Image (cartoon, rainbow, N blue to C red):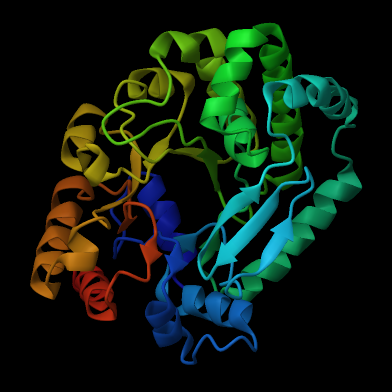
Length: 353
């Protein structure tokens, strides 16, 4: 939307904008078709997705169209994926045993460590791609700079997974730490290449590290891995480039939040109520944080009434966005279980406020 960039800029600067900006991920056929004005019929689904963002959101990240049912693909590491419309999973891991990882990782670490810095030409090519892409979104903000913490990249980028990473850490801690440091260097080069404040003055750190009610690993393990130092280096690099940093993790991360704030994060996403996160308590404890997301998509948006959705939307804007620093949206993403009527009730209430 034409006014989106200014609304987002004002909100992130701590000034209440004329309207609270909407930040979300769309993976909902009815919502996308409504705002695109045409169905997702396989002819140009990516174009329809971009059009729906241009007409329906102020900010987003990760624009991926639906996949054909049962399609398969393979990533650069050799993992095979099976796709189901808006989701996918690893159906065959390239490395299935700890020994497979122990043999493979030294070469991968060497490859990461040998990567050259981003050249001015590479940075400019990336910037031009972002400019071209942003034009398709009609003024809506696309967050292109999305670095990962080392633990997130290991588990979900390489698809090592929680169980295998735990075994590796128990058996080969020095190897895991070398791997993490190499990943961190690669992520710094990625930030250098993708951070363009003139295109989007926000970055999102990917770091899913929690379940409902608890962390995936102990606090001592996060400390041993250098997790907070990793976050601090990401924040510092993004800040040098003029970007504010929103930390993303599903699940309950209140035990990590003091350390994350000390490491320099500027905001938090998605603030998953069903996992135990309390948007209003976080606002009271950390008034300086940009809150992105927060509207319960586990229960309220799929199963509530439009009136209930409107009521909670009004409360969120009044109690957490009265001084800006709110990018309102779902507490993960808008999936196909969210009725179009409920999503439109949410959006209409945002525009009415």
